[in-house]
Image 1: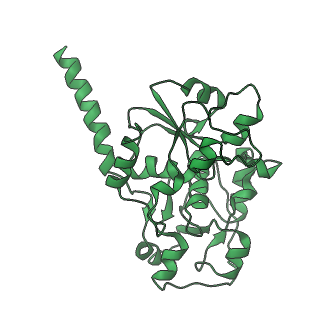
Image 2: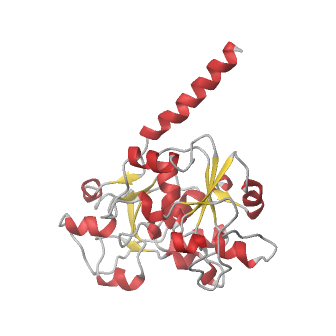
Length: 287
């Protein structure tokens, strides 16, 4: 019994230590500025094309998340991996390089592409802390010039453990070994604001709006702050965690906070999201 208790204690301490080990995939403005001419780094603006055309970080290519979905794209369901890989390759993006993502400051578009790239097996993906507003605030160079980059080959190596299926979500409902996180606003979660959907949320899901992982200026909160945020809601590293929102765009930055900053070992995104869940009338919803 003593040996078993010792092993359990060691495992738990290792899990707790993950709280302070994070930030591996968060890159600062100063660090990115040094990489502008680095041939092994590709910078990706995740902003809307109209915003990218006005101004962007020099050398950045533009990949908006809506390009990566199956028809109808408004559902937000991922296209087949080979199709996504081909699109990424057209922009010169390969899994062999360091990929740095940024968006308009919300974190949700960079977070969405971060999760997609990690699911496709890109080993070195970073998010710019503070996004485009932080870059501008530091008076770093910007441009409106189109970036011309040689096409590349992106070879996917899928990580299915990062993608939650509907069957897995059903298994997680009411299961103490799991936590389901709804990253939408409180009004969406409660059903007060439904936007044409069946009002409510997936049963037993807790509400942690994606904005909660960010500071008011759009930077990621510290590991200590995130630890307090999640543990207060019962989101601990010993549990399997599934995140979602309406189309799982907002869920990506929550995934990033848990996986990269806090190093939680078992975090998934439910790509079908609440939109897909509530489309099937046999799936229950809760207010």
